[in-house]
Amino acid sequence: MTETKLAPGDAAPEFTLPAADGTAVSLDAYRGKRVIVYFYPAAMTPGCTKQACDFRDSLSRLTAEGFVVLGVSKDKPAKLVKFAERDALTFPLLSDPELTVHQAYGAYGTKRLYGKEVVGVIRSTFVIDGDGKIEQALYNVKATGHVASLLKKLGLA
Image (cartoon, rainbow, N blue to C red; front, side):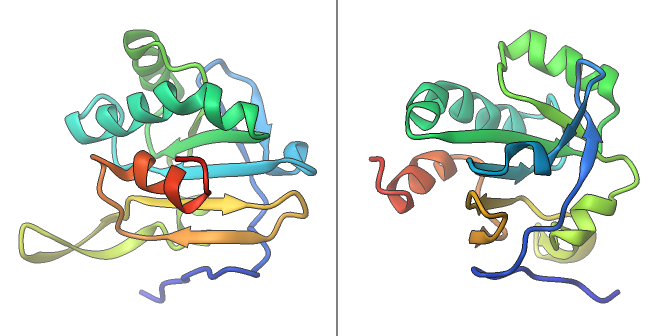
């Protein structure tokens, strides 16, 4: 399996995915804004819940600085609706069950899990500038503490 890894300066792969509410969300719609796209393995699991709630709790700060947050997983929209409702998540959660967007961003492939090599979703975060270029490409991030670390990298903490 050839795995793409994006780097700062690369063009962010365009996508249109269904959101939890059924609307189609396109990266192109956010041109002119800075976008944080984060990929997580599965809605409603402990680590992914922690990470999503950290983004939720930092959303007003990020929004005030002109950022948009988009969460992407392989979950179906119905599960994303439950996740958003259960945890009061107010940013778009996008469904990519075929993993095409995950693969375009290098967020699906070989990773280490409990000491073994497995193929799966690689917890990753991308900061995309207003022109659609990758500012930051962060792979294999930890669920806990990631948002605080990201805020520091963005000069917001």
